Length: 177
Image 1 (cartoon, rainbow, N blue to C red):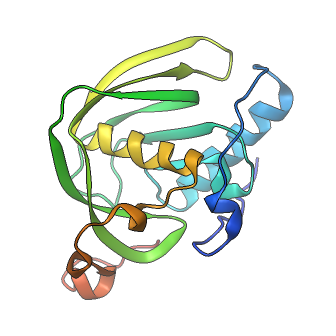
Image 2 (cartoon, rainbow, N blue to C red):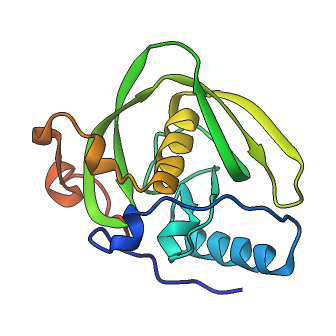
């Protein structure tokens, strides 16, 4: 389909709450998902939320086989998740580095639940119900935050661990944000 422009931090649309999807398996939904996939792939993203493209719907995609932006991350199954609900599986939190296509060139350490259960639907309306931990859980939480108008810098506790990727990681290969 098409690689679309990703909204950047500062655009007020990124701070809005997304609406639930009430009809599945529609050509418009499939077209949105194709554009989201193309955009995520072109920008080496681990995930993408519809609000990042200016579409205020509760739709996220994510998945990682190998990603140059996250070279040490374990694989995450390629998933379409619509109208998600997240339930932490315990109180344990993990801190980890995050970046975002809407916050290009920057990274920060963000606390996230170590384990969670996520439920929702795929593009056909079939139920998805999975448990996740580690990087998988982090990606799901990050993407679902976009649906409630939260960008990862809003979750950072220690801003001494937030900055430009090339300054924080000078020995890393250049990364396209």
